[in-house]
Image (cartoon, rainbow, N blue to C red; front, side, top):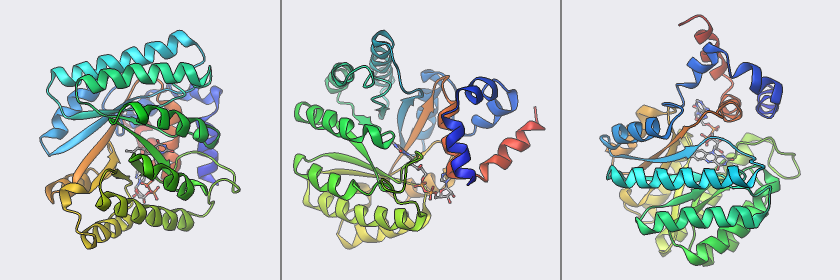
Length: 307
Ligand SMILES: Cc1cc2nc3c(=O)[nH]c(=O)nc-3n(C[C@H](O)[C@H](O)[C@H](O)COP(=O)(O)OP(=O)(O)OC[C@H]3O[C@@H](n4cnc5c(N)ncnc54)[C@H](O)[C@@H]3O)c2cc1C
């Protein structure tokens, strides 16, 4: 119930306008976000690299409705890719197609994505594509397929809570994709997504095994993006049984969540990547983080009393 309320809040314009300005909310969000600028994100990525952790940078914001604004987002990412290269940093980026203009038209988002991918390819960098709410999945998969036919340096997210994902994964494998597997962060109806956590977890594990088989077969990159310790342990075991070396197993987590675990996994030799979000449009994203773990609300409450 609380999860649903928080996800509702993530889409509420009144709350976005009024709560995001409160100082204690801003203090609380810092736990998940080093700062609002890409420079702050890059500085954090440099710090994480000392622990053998690579980063994925992402600009917060979604559902852009003006073509100029979408093009500006693409230019922003090109600048970030250049800054990453200038620092000699091993870091990737992750983009949202609604921020690149998919609501204006798939061709707008495709052109913006193409310019980002071309910049990344010149520098040997990698671009992830987020998957948003279920109404965008078909369009996102279509754009990914088209992009992947021109560039190898791109990957797509798949969400284990969606009933359709096993089919989507099977259809993608022949194009040798890069897949980031997540549970899924949006409010979805039960016809579309498994409503029970145990079914989502079960599906995640089944999909993970399919992906590990594909990784062993070669040509496919898989990143398991989860903080779920039980799942990670299961994936570690399955990977070892398939003879996949630790350096060939990739775990992604969010900045500020499971920090000790991230370092521990990196020290054991696994490939660990941390998603660093930045930007001013953090409110809907932050509400989704609270919805994933409503206990985080206590942390926000505590910040009410601190300065
Ligand atoms: C790198 C990365 C990229 C992602 N990209 C997308 C995307 O493109 N599309 C999409 O829909 N979703 C995306 N997500 C979010 C994802 O769908 C989940 O909502 C999120 O990862 C939480 O699920 P979980 O797998 O950690 O499992 P859960 O079962 O939610 O959590 C397992 C445990 O992890 C810890 N935990 C999880 N979330 C939090 C939190 N917010 N605060 C504190 N502790 C927490 C808790 O200890 C919890 O018990 C991404 C996540 C990551 C890590």
